[in-house]
Image (cartoon, helix red, strand yellow):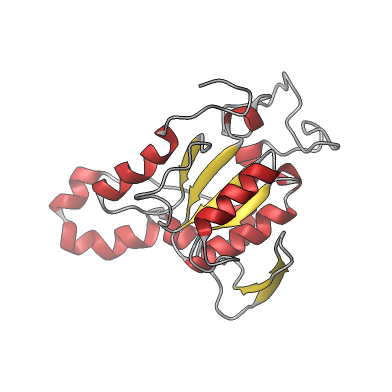
Length: 212
């Protein structure tokens, strides 16, 4: 995936003339996670529910993204656990590349741009070896029980590692103290929404290893 940076000042000076050009080459998550409406696939989630979705247009790029996040390499990942090998020379600092990744990121909230992106990513996470054994919770509104908070709480209570996929649910008026991090994989346009979301990981609580 090639990401080209633009001269922001120059864009503002020539805004009208360059707007279409800017939109065609600037990176944004809506484009990155766009689904292909001509193709429909299904997957079975961890509760046994079959769900339809449109696979990503940039399917291979999303694979690369997940591999970068996890440093997934057959020579660097323990095939029994799917976790990075401790002291690996390739551990880089991306969220799931460190030896204690699943302690520091045991329960996370991932913000996606739309329902199809969440469903397609859900399917990929279930297939990716590095996320083997992680409970994936759909909190987009197209969730399993109709009560996303209950789904998250049950997943955390019954699993060592969880990822919650959301479009905005559970980011206001709700506290999930177990969340350790928020991954913003959408193009937030509202500063208020941004701050409301990132502070979901600041609720008072303790990590699974007992650290505050």
